[in-house]
Amino acid sequence: MFKGKQSYLMGAIIISAGGFVCKIIGAMYRIPLTALLGGEGMGIYQMVYPLYCILLTVSASGIPTGIARLVASGNGEGAEKKAFLIYGSIGVLGSLLMFAFSGALASIMGEEAVKSCCRALSPAVFFVSVLSVVRGYFQGKSNMVPTAVSEVTEQIIKVGLGCLLAYIFKNNLTLAVASTLFAVTVAELVTATFAIIAYLRHNKGGISKNSQKTPPAKSILKYTIPLTLTAMAMPLSQFAESAVAIRLLRQITQEATALFGIFSGCAITIINLPVSISYGLAAASVPQIAPFVSSGQIKKAKRLAYKALLFTLAISLPCAIALYFFAPFAVEIIFKSLPPSQKQTLIYLVKIMSQNAVTSSLVQTSSACLTALGKPLKNAVTQWGVCILRVILTAVLIKFTTLSVVGAAISANCCYLVAVILNFCYIIKEGAKNENYAYRSGHRRKRFNLKG
Image 1 (cartoon, rainbow, N blue to C red):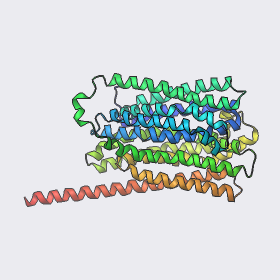
Image 2: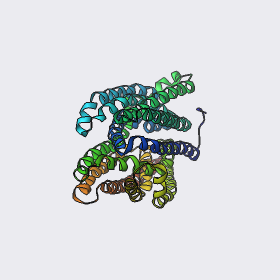
Image 3: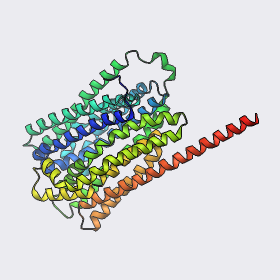
Image 4: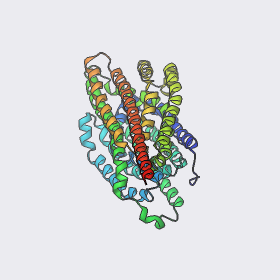
């Protein structure tokens, strides 16, 4: 199972199926979780999770795509071994920082429960950094099965253990939320352990014969750092957005935490379901496009990039339409335990944000294409720009209008659309630039040969 190599479409289908199953399990997880924790508990959960994502991004998020790109290009033999050392160390540091600054974060957020929640979740940062290296290695080999299997396993453990612990401690809200986050730590530990075993079994002979080809740390960081910077933008903006939005919402309602929990913990969960379907197209694009870029076949690389984007649009557009029209049904099924007033708010948010099923999907695929084309820094610029815009726009819409939390939804819509447009422009521009360079180089070689 772990030695097979799949075609582009088969790899995309495998990883998309795994991602979609994870999202379905995650969405179903919200049913008992919301019933046990309530809107306030979900709000606390969403206060802590963005910080975890920030640290996770630094230690892990750029790894799978960066390592996959290096391995797929044929110039990254053994890259994963150095990545284990580099990002394992960063993961340890991230875990220690999350634990050490849990008290300070609780003070900033104005919620004492955040402290114990951060500490319960902190070890997961290290485990995910190790797991991400293994996923990147197999993706670079065009084998998406390990990623899909590990994601589903991780989600099952998190959901099963999380529900059990939340139920056991349901009479203590702080302990209940902290225990669900501790379940994430346990899930990452178990999954990382099995991933390392799978890697060692696949790599029995090691790479001693090709050790001279092992790329320097600089080559690994060349791709992983821009991807890390790109991935950091979203959780940082979510963290800033949660702090800003909750403080502003408290000026107009006593249910600010619950209201923001409905937006970030419920509405976005539903929106992300169809986005997960197209995730496989993004992951499978990198090992398909990168070899053509390395060999100078830019036209073929661009053709594959456009193909991936068209597939993404074809999948995400019907999903967005379905989200809009079936929002009440989805809310009733997934978040049945919410009070009627909160359900109505959630339905309205899902309808407004349904277009994000298209724009979010296109952003993740176009980002992967830019990485495969060797321009990950372009995507980093886009993500940081739109995320800063998102926080500012959210604050303005909540503060100076009567939109309340709906302002955050409108802000997200605007920013994802801007990100899609910028990424498209970069892909077109870079492709044209590389084609012109290849043409001029070929023309000069031809002229030289004629003269000779």
